[in-house]
Image (cartoon, rainbow, N blue to C red; front, side, top):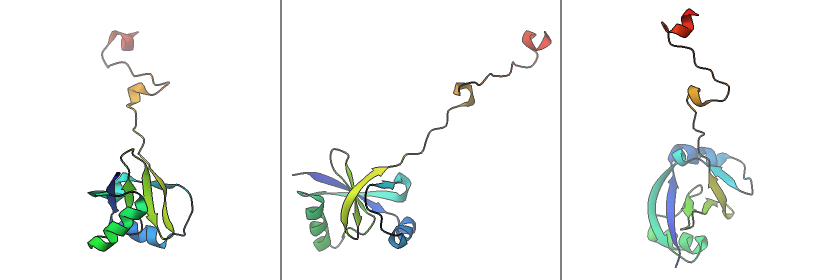
Length: 113
């Protein structure tokens, strides 16, 4: 039986998500907006939803289920839809950026020429 990891949406982003217009299709989600929670054994995301609903800790709109394969499904008013993490781009140090020429250190022979 598949195991789903639960990611609960934090309250501040949940308010924005709740009032945003529904858009079908893949949802882009930010890891900073979620907190890792428990895991649930279920045949599908809908079976997990039913199990959690009767457990006293139901899935709320905006919560995520992550399958063992890493596939994310977001709980929306109309059911579950595909989601993916949006990870922030890492900034490269200036020395590694293309076209960057470092200034010579002060007091070196290159500066005296």
